[in-house]
Image (cartoon, protein in one colour):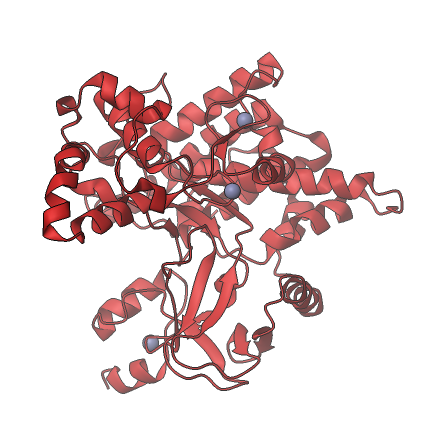
Length: 469
Ligand SMILES: [Zn+2]
Ligand SMILES: [Zn+2]
Ligand SMILES: [Zn+2]
């Protein structure tokens, strides 16, 4: 266990051979079939995933692309909005588009700011200092002055009784509640609610339809994650995704396969994404001396184990026991930690205030008499986007280059949680598509240091030119 001593997890020992199979690199042919089928089913006919002995897995153009062409809109396998970001943005928990209305988005945020909300009413609001081992920022905004807006006005915005000028040009889908009755998850449509329920949420819902013992166990797990690192929440979704796929495969009448081979099949979409265990790849915080690195990594491992115990109390399934091992949990969290593309969806509240600001002077003055109060109350973070962590199956196959020919970029029309990849320059059929995992304008040394976290030394043409001799 990478210098961290013997694993505290019994399952790691009991199921060592099965865990080794779950974490093994999938055989080439099986991986190739998986990607071919994924590309076919999602109609991404502009690309193909291919393997070379030199670079391993990569994505190639299957046709010519001009500069700025859309190459791919990649749907995540698993993802989640950051807990603190839920204060700033109300989005569909399945497709991550903004929901309700501009008034609802503004009203709810001012309301939560005014009560100093944490996302979980029973735990303190955690921010920088206590977000242990997390590489993700904290956007819970506190610099607005929501006290200036009377509570009654805030409430009427949230309830839809007050409408602001021009918001009819920024319509959002109405809010659909979780079918299990929890308050944590909201949706843009019944189909998103149902898909989320079937794919992940039915095992994680803390609503009234969940059996009380399981519900209280789930609440403890969620509280622990919100108090330490919300990356555990997305890891839990990856586990329920696999469990629910396993159950679906098992129900198929034609299935005569062993439980373990069904689990391997259920696990396949995630098996393509592993790199390292979380506690081995998480960046060492700047205030921790390198002599304390080992004990820091052991602490992270123990924290993950704590989280895993709470999750097991809630949803352990003996048929899928290896899935609940610390080794597998560590690899799942590590996969999200080393993700080179976060979930980001731009805020329509930002678009709205930009629209107001762009009105002709005469009109703007009148409108701002109404909207100015809210803009001031929201503070400078009024434009915070939806932010989270996700695993994108095809984007994650794209190799890095410091002089990439493509980039991840959300256009105005990209209003949900898909990853969008655009061509940066003309790309010909057969050419490899590359993106930059880091800021490619950094110096050679800084780039190599950051890429070391991903486990490789970059030998792109820019690096070959700049490499000191
Ligand atoms: Zn949706
Ligand atoms: Zn629910
Ligand atoms: Zn490079």
